[in-house]
Structures are given as structure tokens and as C-alpha cells.
Image (cartoon, rainbow, N blue to C red):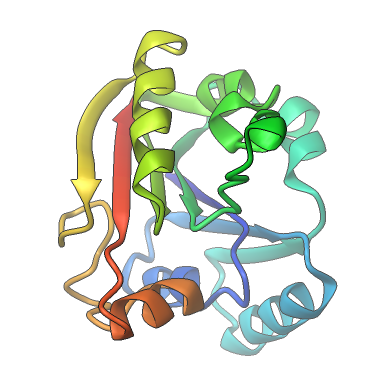
Length: 178
């Protein structure tokens, strides 16, 4: 089973998941040079054979580098919501790469989103269902479930989520299934 995290930051979430899920393979991609350097260093230091981190733009890899129906789960946690209408095309679910996210998912595979912006999750739910024929398993305010592992990360999975939860700011999630 391959699990992919896009925008992995410094990789703490996947590092912990890899430790407790040795039969799954975790691949994390981060575009920011500084965060990616920390992530790769952290992953190398862990010496976990089921964990890989890469620095780079995920879009080319999603379009040409990942075989169809090869990924069990894709995590996109707290992406930039691009709140201005002029920037809507940059939202992951409206981006030209979205069909490739669906293509690389295995049958019954899941796409897991999280955001502090409720509009983002509502719109992602609508687009995922209507344009990409994904089945919504969970959509709404963030609560512990088997897809987000919040029971193991009560303070949050990412630095953004930790900041939002600490300040009692609501967070939202979408879990879609192919």
C-alpha cells in the first residue's frame, strides 16, 4: 500500500504513521526547500525502510511519474485555499492535476483533504462528487476517524493544524473514495 502526502512540510505526520504501519509505504513531497530539507533529513535519520521524502513540485510527478491505480491514500492537508475568485484555478480540486490525483488512486482508494476554510472543503466536496465521480465518505468539521488518525495526534497532524486547534479555530476535512 502506497500512501502519498502532498505538501508534507517537515514530514512529522508521515514519519509517525510509517513507524506504526510497517506494511504501508509512505511517500511525502514538499515544494519548500527549507521544509523539504528538514523532512528528508528527518526521514533519513529514522532509517525507516517504508518512508521516502522528496523536495519538488508534485504536479509533474502526478502527471507523468506515478502509475495509474497505484496509490491507496493521498493526503492534502491545509493547502493554500486561494480565497480570491481570480485565483480559484489554483485550488487543488480545480487544478489541471485533479484528474491525475483520481487516476493514480487505486479502486476504493481515498483522497483526504483538511483545511481551516469551510468553503474550501464544501467546494472540494461538490467538485469531487460532480466532476470526478468520487464518493464522499466524510465531509465537515474535523473529528477523529480512521483516515485522519487524530486519536494518535490529539494536538494536530501538521504545524498548521496544531496552530488552528490550539487557538480553537475550527478545521474541516473531506475524505473521498474512488
